[in-house]
Length: 522
Image (tube, rainbow, N blue to C red):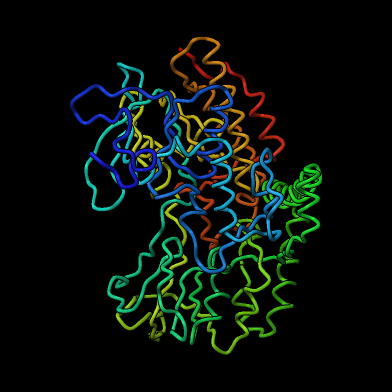
């Protein structure tokens, strides 16, 4: 049996892979996903002396989102000093908001520095995991992710950690006839660098954060660009600039200066998310100020009243993740760019048909339609726990829930690094680092007790769910006007369960202090 890219750099089958003949060895920990979340978990476990770690990644290299995405204009939308591990600052960011290629390079640097690559197995897709109650192990089903490989095998592990992220399953729009389009179709998460764009009639569907970055770049190359907008997005000014050489030198020689910059940026983001969004009941004024800033930004860059009205959201600021840009709005002032807000009714071989019957003929269709966050990512694989409980079905039949955003009752030794109520603030690294603390405490306690299983209790989970539900009652999601926002924050039950309704400081404190008695160790 072989998998593309092999196991450990093309060196043959995975150690412990069950081919139906011999009993496979049991690994200590399997982590699904080689993005920043999976790497953070591995770093923390290795700090504790655990080395039998296997990181399974379906792509051909590490980096997660920053490996998969490479579309024109790709850049981090959180200042790089904050969108990085606090314990591994990078003094060499070229800009305040680094381009995607630098985030990919940073991921590679982290993997090399912390000796993670030898644990990674690329080109491997995990299709499911089942808890074996007799052996107290997870049986993980894997298959080759490419090169026509269809063989399936299993791995066994004591602990299973999913780190598939929030943005791992590209979402295709459910539009009649889209498969009949005769031109070139490109999804932003599967960018085709060989596609001919210069002088072409390009249409783009989607005006979220990805669309905001893509639109100005496509406009530079298209003969004509049509932007199909369903929902406008709140856009605030992007204070971005090249980091001068002298500043990079200071950051390298005196890391405390970069930590100070991180703290300053973090404080601004905390106010934006915690005060204006999560504590909307008490921070309406700040929320209104943020919306006013965004409207002023729009007014200064778009002089046409009709276009400005079409680009102005009708939902409250924060219902949908806002973004930062200085180049998005001016694009709509170009003669070769059209903003189309009519409903798309179908796609034909020659182009897109909108509600008024107009056909916009296109050569290239770009899909900036985001990711199947709730449909395919909670969870990203089939996970079957104690008593045959199917995690995805249980969440959908009841409510999306996970104690401290990471643990679920009846799923022993299973930790989801992107579970419901896990996302803290606006930088994913805040979430990662809080969960690294949590994992350390749990594994340390299990080792201290000589336990082989860790499982959150039903009572603790219910208490946590009640607490976050209560705290969300003062958020913009409950008290603001979010109708029509089409926000991925909301799960299929209509609850904003992706976000942890607390400050970053509070989440980190809770990770250090949650009662270990909330877990059963056996």
